[in-house]
Image (cartoon, rainbow, N blue to C red; front, side):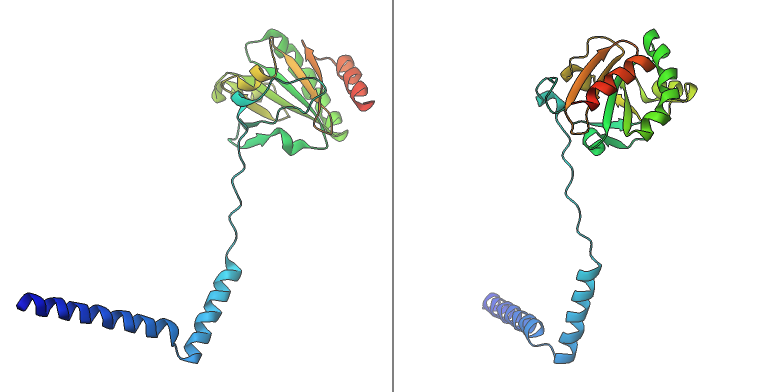
Length: 204
């Protein structure tokens, strides 16, 4: 008997709560409803939509790079931990230079690129120096010693070098202003070879 009474009392209490909530939600006094609406509008106006995350290219699923085809987009970390995308440089000629600190031809090439880079930048040319499979600390120390004045990126797994068919260091890929891979050069770049390739790209 007592159990039935408790069940009925509980059911009555639940109904009362539901009725109270229903009244509160649907029958606010007009002044209070106005204030609630104003607060909601203010909250909506101050909220910022969260941008969708930019998908990272999966290099292991990418087809091999081909001259005359769109260059493979990538997202690599620089020495400050920022993510750098090839597609961020749309409209510029991009030289993707694969290198390593232990590579003597790379060591010979870098000072000349450092010297040439300000003039290249003025012409809308970007160098992305992609280090091959070394630690950030090793690369950072070398970059500071060499006064590297262009972005230095980390291909820690070597995936970008792999899909671009890099077989030796240094190797430089040239991407035109439309994002098309135009040239692959194996060996140390000089001012003459660099200017010759860039002139050829400008004619296409």
